[in-house]
Length: 597
Image (cartoon, rainbow, N blue to C red; front, side, top):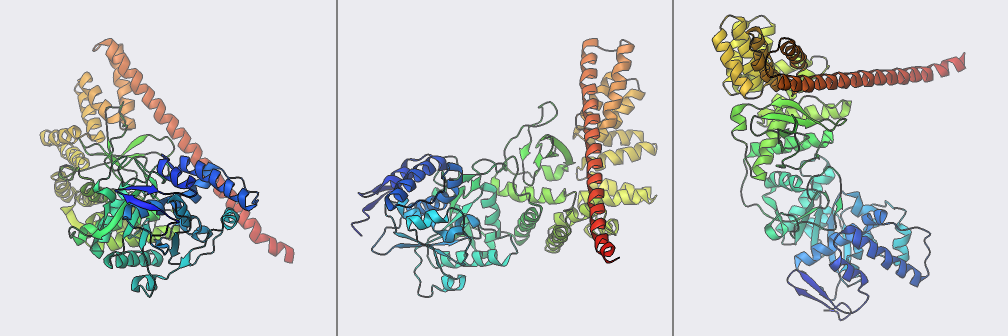
């Protein structure tokens, strides 16, 4: 070991010898990236002054963090690996498409040696040559930092005379169909299988869990460093870059893990289910939520609901299967679907199982395709491939999206998919029942409604109840409506509220109607106002309670009307903007003709 770099490994702690150790001490003692960046700025200024270099570039903590984080990442992984320096520099291969480690020829990552107390003893390798230079590059040149060397994927996999001491795979995307990401996957797996310590970084826990499903095809998995994924554990990178809307411990390189042989072999259809969902989220740009998987979040309905976070802007009330998503404009949770009873009963608690389950739910309740032509085509291809690979939920999601779209032939494509799926899936059975009902075949509709209702799908139970009640089978119809209402179906509660009003059961009707309007049922809210006023005018019920009910339901009606006005104005603004753009385009097209004339 070189006497210029006295370094002794003590468990997971690095004991540093003499020398210029300002950054090494800061690396050991800083609590987060901001602290380390402050120390780094002081160090860099001192070094540049000593070299007589004036870059005329002001260093700020926010801007410097992206320069510091890659070096801190490499230093942390060197410590974790247990590698000890010998006479030659440690060669670290960064497997990444991430621009943060590739810009400025990855000079900043080479400062890992400074963080370890051994300046210059970490050599960075990349698989691709990239000449992206930032405004901070003059500082790197002034400090005399070495650009990375390039080792192609093929050479890295065959170790063609090159020694790789450590590999770090940054943000794998095994779900991606991009050629560069496929190369990254093959290289990382090949190095791990060859015995090279290969570490991996993830955005958050869901990212790690999702990649583990996909990497199972390569017979490898990501094992959190230290074996435990919890706040303050070794698996959490205290020098990662935090990003909003990523959930607990989320951000750039937030989680450390090691690539190891897979502990189990997963079912192919489960791998395809997760792959389909993650590929779709990439297209939609909807990987991240305002909550993390399994997190209990603030709910709706006067805080009497405590949904559990799923994925793709979806959360669920585990008690009754209500599905919610967050409105981007109001930041409120809105009811977007209702899970059927048999599926709700299988909801797991373990995070890996919950991710798989959540992917299936999210795909089943897709409601729209991306608006942009290219992304829409890609999304359709992903869902179609998933369905052909045995992921029924992908076919249901594609059918629902076609059904809601304005695409030519969309309705016919949806019906074709539903027919292929059949009545074994409650959403498909319900859609086929509705199609039969609209075609005037009530007998067929009833059979299909029953097939869906028997699986505990509240929406189907409600419509079956209405159909039975309308055909004179009142007792059976009310029984189905009550099943749906107890599960929390707004329409069923509204219909039962109407029936209660007709029977002069006003207090009972208010209870039913509240359970409908608190989830956005406008007709239930309007009827609730009428019932409450009637009760006050005729001294029915406890006056104070009825007044409070009237106040709350009236406030809700006003809220709905205000929201509708805002939506109408936004639609008008969008239409006006589209008209202006069209007129501007037409004007540009006419100018050459006018000039020629």
